[in-house]
Image (cartoon, rainbow, N blue to C red; front, side, top):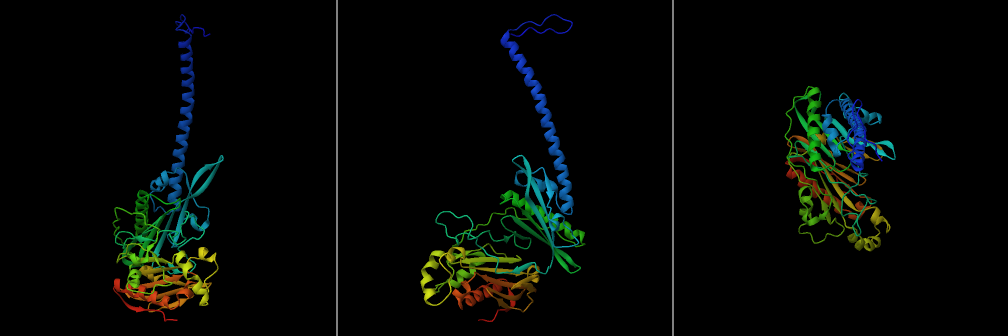
Length: 421
């Protein structure tokens, strides 16, 4: 089948048999294919190398050269192609116009087309900042339309974990996808006392290792932003571990951390009717800039008092409302620079600042103020729609217990509470 091959200028090569010749031919074909495949591989490697180079430039330009580009590309298993968001106010971070942010997109292939999705975000603040936090009843801890397992109550899990202190709390805080690091200025510069950088994994829940990478990026960005503004800082130490915080609510009488005040409030009470029976808190630190606690009433418990509420003339919503409008209470405590910028939502108008010595209420929102170790503090509480009417005077009791215990634990003075209704 195969004729013996002969080199030019010489005799014929020995015929080693049809099968050996066939094998030689296959090896030749494989060699040629290997060369072709190797060429494509080299081209692919060159293309990836080119994309990574372009991405490094894009990251530096979009995020004011506050980040190490390779650290950003390493996230989520590694990305070769990153580009800035096309949204104008998220495309490029400007240190002269803080707060500001940059958002980076990564590419993926779908049905032969290149598509883009959010990958990473960096936001920088110069503190104190007006409106850094806004107390708003539209912020809800539960998603009634989110995925739940069979038999799971809407109040069993919060939509997101609560922010927890980073280390002793003075360095910042972290949540499911964001790590915020704050660095204080040795001396205030143009009214700025500290800088904060928040690094966010936009692709989903990061691993513990990725959260540590986010913390390192946030620290580096905060330090660089401060130094460029002429603010002398000492880079803070980061904790060795950033364990993921849970979303599951537990029995209220066993609440700890940022909800420990509520367990103390329930202790010894014979009548707990209509009060929340679940709680979700986080560890507390006396140097943290913020704290939060979520309380909720289990839907089964709510079913038991529904008929009584109707008999008493209390509006409690229809049957479907018991699932789409869970009953909850959430607290927000802010201290120092976080408190200095806190505002309160005022019914469609521009949020108004909460001044020292001020307290009040607005619809389903209550707030108080105090001075903690010479710095301002704001203590707020929001309540689910209609649940404020269900609690009635007990809402003021719960708020007073929360505010007085928190103020005492943080060694605050001059606590001003809203007048009872």
